[in-house]
Amino acid sequence: MARLRWAEGGGVKLRVLDGADSIGGTKILLDTGGTRLLLDFGINYKRFGAYFEEYLKPRSSRGILDLWRLGLIPPHPDLYREDLWPADLKREGEPLDVELILVSHAHMDHCGLLGVVRPEIPVAASPAAWAVLKAVQDAGKAEFYSETVYVVPRVQLEDSRALKSAGWKSRAARGREVRLTGGMVPNKLVEFLHRPPNPNGRALEPSGVQPLQGEIGGYGVRAFPVDHSLPGALAYALETDAGWVVYTGDLRLHGEFREATLRFVEEARSLRPRLLLIEGTRAGPLGRENPTEEDVRARAHEIVAGSPGKLVIADFSPRQLERLQGFLEIAATTGRTLVVLSKDMYLLEALETCGWLAGVTNSPSLGIYDDVVVSPQVWDRRLR
Image (cartoon, rainbow, N blue to C red; front, side, top):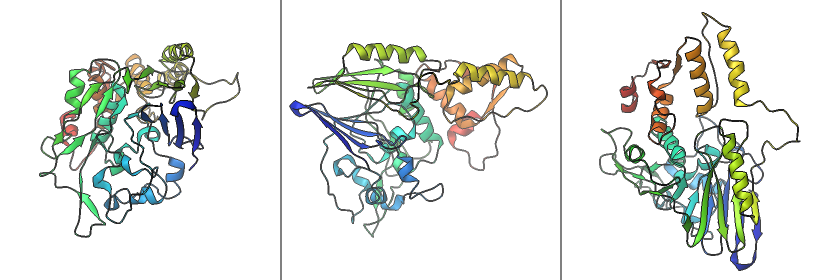
């Protein structure tokens, strides 16, 4: 696991704990000189793929042991949930004393290991990103390490090396402390974050949902919306004793929010940052042609309009809501209905709680695929 380091006078230090030589897996520690922050806490799929696959996962009955022993999480014991420590795993390693984890966006390669982190360590994110993560966790079969928004408590068995989920009647899930960007947090979003996925199942103990303040420990923190392939992506600027450090997260210039990225560039430039951390997976030579989302939408419209009387199947990345919006507009203009999975509709409803895609779930051109589900969850039954 590559660990890059940078240090300045006054105690300012930066360590790339993971993600320096891979796509995603980002975990960056920044010591501002007075407070310690983590930038993202994602899954390194390259390293995960060396040990695990779709039907071979880290053993939930062993807590963080597999992740720790295989070097898939940084060896700093004070980061991790007390209930995920099996009795035979020694707590060795430097404490980090992290005060805040800043999540750039809701892709798992940037936040997919938050589930192992202590829920009392606050996480900063955009309202849209946190709504997306709550919907994904509610509607999915979350592994213990991807319990991003709320955590299900574990208890030791008679063999203290083994763990299991606590009884649902006796122990509530616990919401993670979160600091959301953009000022006042919408009441509808707070209600959604505090709502358990199954009102008749395990209760959900509400977390502290508060606005992200402009500073932490006396050091400035600024968040900037940027264009990416899912809602709520952010870049951050963090004040240190050596000057500002800017972290871009993942960003692009070919989508609906291109202007947001350009505004971020100008505002970050005005800070005269001492250090710029930028993701470079798709960095390439100038002049290379990249299709925009408008190009994709135009081509898709051409194909759909030229296929009267035929079923059209569109496949695109999960949570790529801009692409979904595009196909919804195409459906409306060509007299068709866009049919989505119930979990996609649930995600759209979640985003409406924070002001994104207002009214889209009421579109007459949008429908839900009536899949056969033996035991649908409560949220699924409601949508149908």
